[in-house]
Image 1 (cartoon, one colour):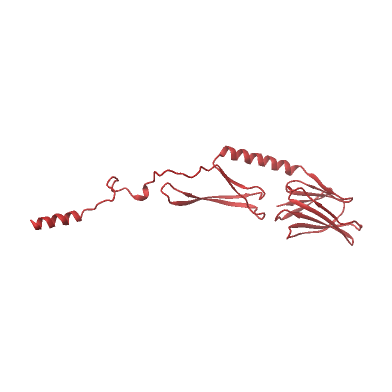
Image 2 (cartoon, one colour; image 1 turned 135 degrees about the horizontal axis):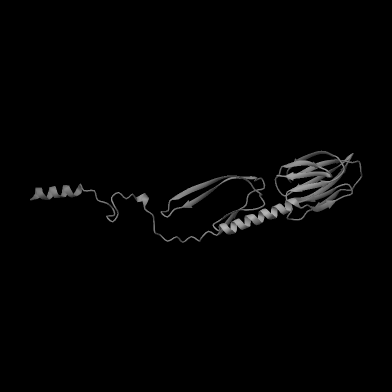
Length: 214
């Protein structure tokens, strides 16, 4: 009798028992998900602002959490120029995001194509749009260069005149924040202060010069 009981106990201990008998034996724990209620607020729209040195967005990475609580990342590769003045948006409302993008593109094109007069002296005038500065003058530009702290474009114009120092603050929504002009021997110097970090391309036009900021 004792031998029979021992044999029975050995047989029972050798059986493979599962923690939960209601799942199939082949079911793996990693293949199942949770039915827990998600209490996070739904995403409507979020944004991030980039520094003034940003010019190209190379990619976006999303960190997300799955139903089972595990964390993952997913990325999309991009190679697009950006305007650092505008925030980068993430939204699940495609229609609103598309309308906003089209509206901003249209506004940007209008500003790019229309110049506004911002300052003038007897021999030189300045016109600006969103990203460009048009300098109207018949005088020859001798040199031009870029300085930092604050970020500013400096150029010298050939003319032997005696003028008082000139300074003018620009509108708050302009990337050209201040214009300063000072007299030197044989030329006058123009300083254009900027609202952030830029490079530029100088183009000679029929009536002066155009600074295309980048």
